[in-house]
Image (cartoon, rainbow, N blue to C red; front, top):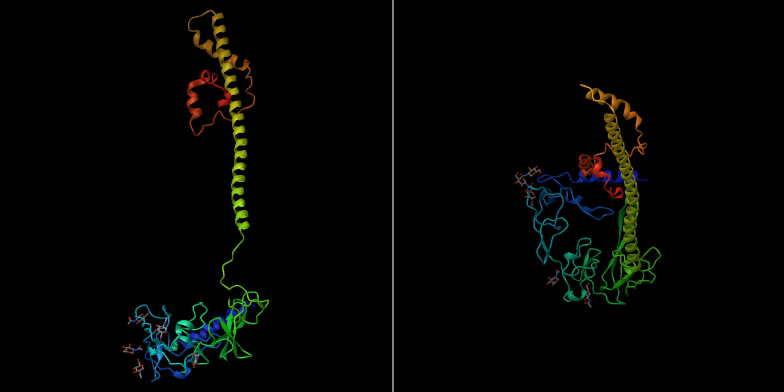
Length: 356
Ligand SMILES: *[C@@H]1O[C@H](CO)[C@@H](O)[C@H](O)[C@H]1NC(C)=O
Ligand SMILES: *[C@@H]1O[C@H](CO)[C@@H](O)[C@H](O)[C@H]1NC(C)=O
Ligand SMILES: *[C@@H]1O[C@H](CO)[C@@H](O)[C@H](O)[C@H]1NC(C)=O
Ligand SMILES: *[C@@H]1O[C@H](CO)[C@@H](O)[C@H](O)[C@H]1NC(C)=O
Ligand SMILES: *[C@@H]1O[C@H](CO)[C@@H](O)[C@H](O)[C@H]1NC(C)=O
């Protein structure tokens, strides 16, 4: 299903290339000029910058319709737009004066028609494109959009083909010469007042909002912004701040657990160090005692020491040092333990272990 419109697009692009292949100074045929089926876009043999002139040769365009025209080379000057009181036709060959009421005009080109004297009253200011300065081009004839309620009217229905990614459908656009705020009823051929939101309808033109929804009821304009209730703002606000606060509380408890684990480790370390200190003091004590009890012979000092260390070390138990804290070879970020390493065991036992 998706494949079909894509191939269609591919073929239509290829087709356009074939049609637009003719460049400047090459022959063309004015009889090939037409509006494309479904989109009603103007096409001719000549490429974007040229039009097919009366001698059937592609010549430079001398006016443009769009502010930013498509397909021009960057090294050429785009032709100007037409001044007020003139229009640039679909062919874009040259500017022309506006056409008086009743004259033939091009499809959907309300801007080609001269304005009525009371254009200020008739002009469309809704933005729906109902007329240009009070004039409309219906069935290729210039008219004024002056039909009052109950007056007979002219209507032009056009079937456009709408291409979506997966499908295509027909969209019928109905235009008329009724005044702004009225629509031309196709069966009665009479101008009727447009319906308010909530009234049943059969077409967009019947609604003042130009939006007859799928249920056949006049709905809000299609571009109306969506307004959400005040409670939605409150719920979203609570959700945002609640989420932030919950995160903070969660982090606090997580870090507290971590802090307690660290403190436990430090306490363990302090006990360890204290035990070592006690061992060393004991060792010194033992050494002193054994030295004092020995008679000092010539050259006996060193050998005595060696034998003493070898024997005594194994005899002294390491109280409380059975489980390692894992901090002995640990170098902290703040250098706390590095500094204390020099102070030695004697300094450390004066400190409150819980402060570590
Ligand atoms: C036609 O050819 C002449 C001479 O080469 C050139 O000056 C002119 O711009 C061409 N016209 C178009 C429409 O390309
Ligand atoms: C048509 O265009 C060609 C190429 O620019 C030009 O030579 C010729 O005079 C033009 N014919 C008319 C009638 O302007
Ligand atoms: C302008 O650029 C196009 C290619 O973009 C080139 O074919 C053409 O000859 C250039 N024209 C001039 C007048 O430089
Ligand atoms: C509308 O028409 C009047 C009368 O012809 C003209 O003076 C005025 O400039 C037009 N306004 C616009 C926006 O075209
Ligand atoms: C309404 O416009 C038509 C042309 O479309 C004109 O003939 C007719 O006189 C106008 N009626 C009024 C009342 O201005």
